[in-house]
Length: 70
Image 1 (cartoon, one colour):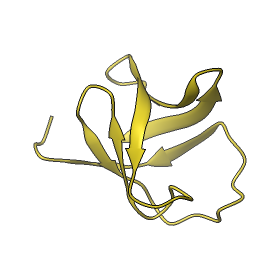
Image 2 (tube, one colour):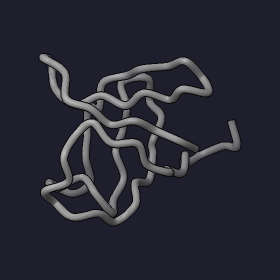
Image 3 (cartoon, one colour):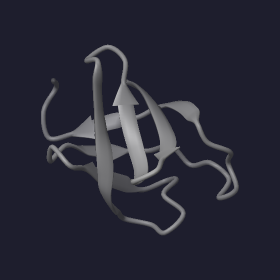
């Protein structure tokens, strides 16, 4: 699914345009975020693609949701 990752005044957030949903990122598997999983405030876990640690935000990527096929 397409996900836009961006910085907000409160930290990183993930926006899913197809769901019209934006949630803060509350946990990251890796400090650089890319190539690992992130957990959103609503409990969803997304697997992000490998990208350079210095990737500029905002950026739209293809991510995979863990858990169900929502």
